[in-house]
Amino acid sequence: MRISVQEAVFDPGAELSGFGAGRADVGGVVSFTGLVRDDTGTLEALEIEHYPGMTERAITAMVEEAISRWELADALVIHRYGRLDVGAPIMMVATAARHRVAAFEAAEFLMDYLKSRAPFWKKEVTRAGESWVAAKDADEEALKRW
Image 1 (cartoon, rainbow, N blue to C red):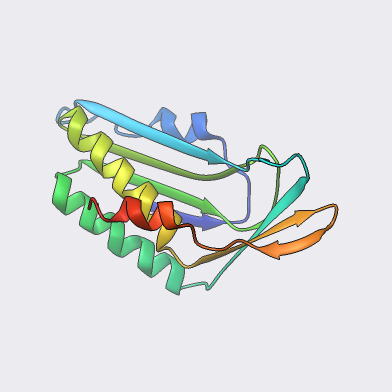
Image 2 (image 1 turned 30 degrees about the horizontal axis):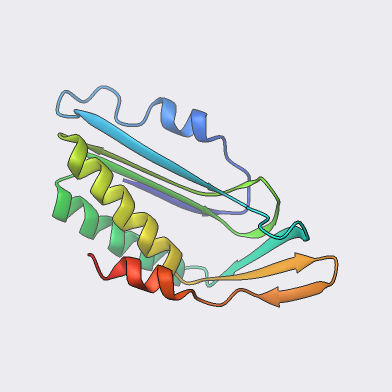
């Protein structure tokens, strides 16, 4: 298990290259990388803040839950903070499991958790100004399946 909350950009391919390697019990690896998306054509950047220490503890607890529930062989969560330009990677989740269903479900669980429950605060920076991003009902609904 590896969890990193970092300001530095990361290379998803490099992060995934050795993930789950060398383990005879791994039948599948699932990964997802979230990028800064501009839905309106006006976004210049996304600024992400977090509470150091608390954020890592909260993510660790959820990763440990995923490992236990889906009997994961390994899990990786990377989440960035700071100013991120459009198209930049925000976060990455990877799960390794004996079976593909477990790897997919655990990855979705972790992505839903990161979107709705991890203590990050996001502010959109546009040409017109700045505004904090509010929680979305759809993200809360996604958590109900877990």
